[in-house]
Amino acid sequence: MKRENCLNENNIKKNGFSLVELILAIAITTIILSLIIPFTLSFSKNHKRQEEINNMDLEMSKTVDIIKKVVRSSQNYNGNKAIITPIEGTTSSALVLTTTVLNSSGIYIPYWVKFEIVGNELKVGESDTSSSSIVASDTILSNVEDGYFLYDKNVVVIYLKLKNGDYTRTIRDSAVTRIDFNF
Image 1 (spheres, helix red, strand yellow):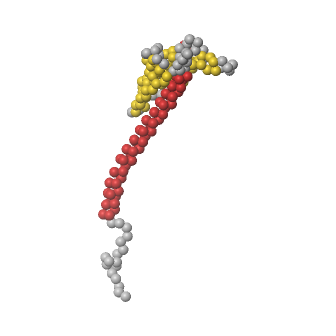
Image 2 (image 1 turned 135 degrees about the vertical axis):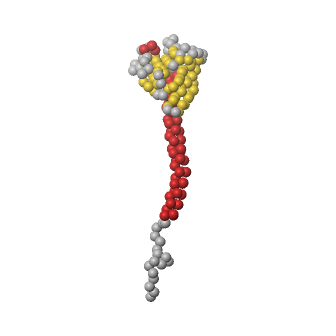
Image 3 (image 1 turned 45 degrees about the vertical axis):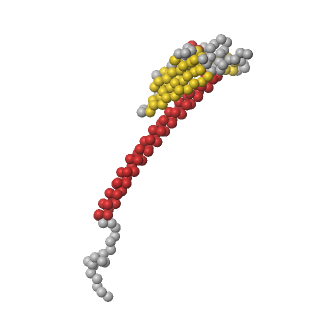
């Protein structure tokens, strides 16, 4: 049996990585991460932006559907016009409609609904006594930057512009009132 020298390079077992290999691995990892992280952050930011825009669109859509439903159910009642405000052919920040509801006695009675843009909110109010006593106090849409209602020839045009932080969304829609045909 030969005695081998402990210092013989052929016998030294190499365990782990050398300093150069570690530095090279760290450099490659850093380069890869520096490429991935901005992409991930950009994707996350775009996802958040799209989510906020979708939420704004959803809220506007729900609100416009409510308004359109009330406009479609509006009708003349004992000489009262279906649309009280705005005056035909003009725009207004308020929309007051006459409709009817069935009371507990089975009789249809007049009922008024008011949509009004107050500050940066769209509010709604209801009354069964008169159109002049309505206070629109229930907020149905916030962050309204601009908006109006236009009424002309049995058509109500709804225009709303919402601003939430850096994001702005606009919607224009219309609804036709119930038309009384006399044959």
